[in-house]
Image 1 (cartoon, rainbow, N blue to C red):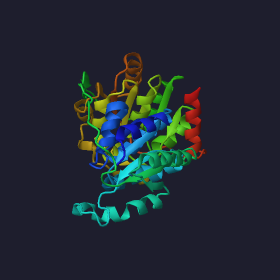
Image 2: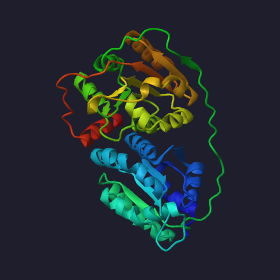
Image 3: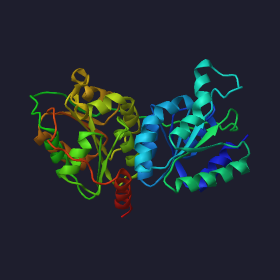
Image 4: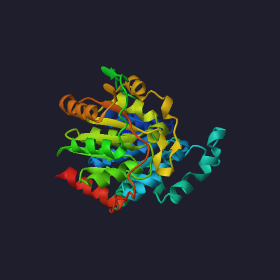
Length: 376
């Protein structure tokens, strides 16, 4: 078995100090080490963890993601539509529950048979983690070689690989909503491009804008393609988790997350995680038109959801219903002055700009440009 603390110290020596993930009994001692000694964010699900770690990578941190193999399926979307096209490399540890020949629960049987096949299908390089510490250290160097090529690397971890590491502390989530403003007037219902133009006009030299997948990123690109913009493709529902990881590691920047109703509905657990960790430099804006605009205008179920109340109950410091563009402008100005994790909800009109183009840059070029900007 590996001495968990010594293995963790080797990871730290190699630059890995940011961890996120979802617990698994096979990985609990490594998770305990991460909580005790490093910056660790507990995610609501494994896909969110991938996005959080990816945001931390954009912020300049070598990132580790931890998960049970049953949750690997939850991570498929961001691994193939975020990390692959943007060439965002992560170091992963995934347990091998249901390993053939090892007694386990029935729900792990199939995943135990296909875990490594799934990694290979996603073009994620992997190795079984050795239970010998010195050999495991050599494997880490091999993994870094892959990461340096902007490709992810996962270790598959068998039962009883890590020695016991006692959990010394737990983060205290002393969260509360300080301000909630509910609907009190008629909605102006601007177009998305009008709302995005208002948001974009408020940015300054320390602002990073993360736009959710679909028409939101495409319209923001047409308004003003800026070095501080990141246009998500795929990985629907992951934009605020990406923002959380980036905000956690780039406290000197203002992180503005621009989301949509279909996106938030897909991964609503991220709101609870965002609220718990509460980065004060993150502004989360939801533009809701009640439809999946990018795929033909099919209705979402957002028309009966009180997102302002949900964000407030999840611990966002401020949560506000925005009725007009002038309110949107004043609220962004107020956030820039006072900070604190803030959620702004605005209803917008259905539809989008006609003959809407797409970013001319490849996703990995958008990533490299943003990293260059953050390194300035």
